[in-house]
Length: 384
Image (cartoon, rainbow, N blue to C red; front, side, top):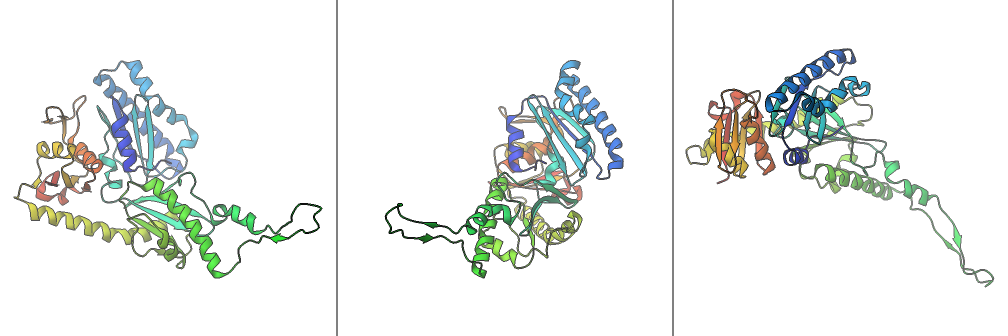
């Protein structure tokens, strides 16, 4: 399963040519609901085909572009072990799918760029990761307020202590003698032993194991800012923290052997740790907006915010979940046009502002409309 990270956002945002098709839909973890999910996807693909024709494609061109999505309808393995939501991104030469532990409203957007706003809960203040550690297994999860989704660790990340140190295990068992050249009669024996089995050695082995895990996480999460929660028996957590290089590891952790603990139980315990962190950050951001109101450093006008985001001027951005402001933005003329409803080729300006803010290192808070400052759907604090 592919994890949706800022790097994925950047790749999809920079490498895709129009038309770009974004499809979101809810899915069900219970297999008996698969047929309902397939029917929903079939209807959304049909809707996307109609939108592509309105965009200017011929019927056969639209069908060819959507063929990778259509193939999912008959892929039995695809419908096993679903999460709560499915996101598909399709463009010439591009097809990516993400199964996530958050439900989506059914939505199809065809435009000159992909539509990312439904995924902002994973990039704008609600995303977190859980690393479940034991000597026998490593599990990594991506989470939101709605649940956890297991993700594959990067290539090279060990799945257990035995795998990480398998070569050391072989070396420890070797005891052999070597001598000088045969026939000298003066052979001098040299004996090689593995390391001892004391407490210090045990910790050293675990540290080497954890360093490999940390390196794998660094490769996967190098551009992320979401908090990381550790789960493991109590004595392992401080050892891991000794070598951790991920800057957003939270204090504390989930103590106890995580082997056999369900994702639902891990989520419940992890959310209790990260929810206060998210609330505190959002409250501080809202207070900063109010503090700077009237100084020229804040705005709720999309015609100011969208160019500001595009040029990297946004420090903090509040975006209303479930709302859209359709329109267009011409970077060359630095002009924003607002549309009263979706038109062929138009896109959600709230989505554009949020995406550009994230790509330029700003903070985005995807919140209920009632939590956006100044009773707006979009509110920003400018860096300058």
